[in-house]
Image (cartoon, rainbow, N blue to C red):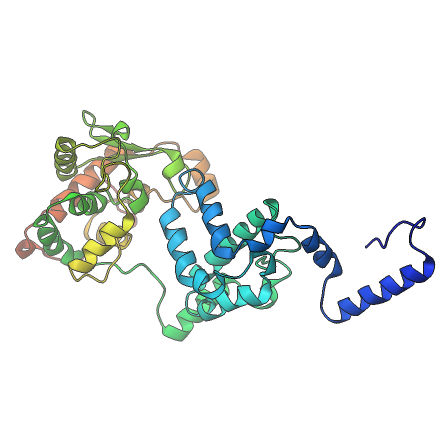
Length: 364
């Protein structure tokens, strides 16, 4: 840290300044950070975390993020109540731990994801001139000395509770009865939820679907890479009931989105589907129906694991196998989704669960 030019600062003054700086270090104050903070433009002192959050979200929503609503809910629920009114320039490790301490043990995945998002917001604030110095939300050589890694925290939670943390899902044997109740409801949210179940797609993929992605003649929905978790284009074969839903939505089309919001000027909120499930008194998540589909594939069909995983747009765990496999097995997946359609529309009274005995790996 420079103490001033030799032409201006006498040796005795430099010694006195050095002594004052060392005293601050003993008191836990970083004099370089203090000096940088003093140089910040005056309006930076007035920017709170919540105000910075609004600016940060305004620059990234709809541009670089797929799940803006989820990020906003996480910040409002877990961060704003704790440090929302704190000036961004004053946020330190104590503030970060006040957010993470209550959730790291019981919700390690959420806590880890939230820490990374707070770190990104604080980095943005530094670039924008709202703060200076080290990022108190950084993990390496900082918070990793306080918290166990996410994988270890999740393992400890499983050992403590005796169960893994999954999205609550409906057992597949109860699905036909649920689908009957769902089809008794009208409106875009009910059709969107049914479409998500029939295609085994993720919520964001369904709610952001546009008509340009749908080939009604080929009965294929092509989800672009920028909306896929694995960042690869994904083709979805559309079963009979899914096509019926699309024709219903086409009759009331109000823009580019297949499932628009009430105003018709944007996509439907994922909360609409979750609230629908709550009104139906189902303590499950939309994402959980993908697990329902996967369990049904494994226990009630002879379709191979690879076809089921491709239907869910999962990546292959073996990098070598992934490099050689170029086909998306669309024709075989058409058969799988047709079978899933038949099961979803089956009268509940005809549902039977038959164990499938396999020798080796079954395939179709």
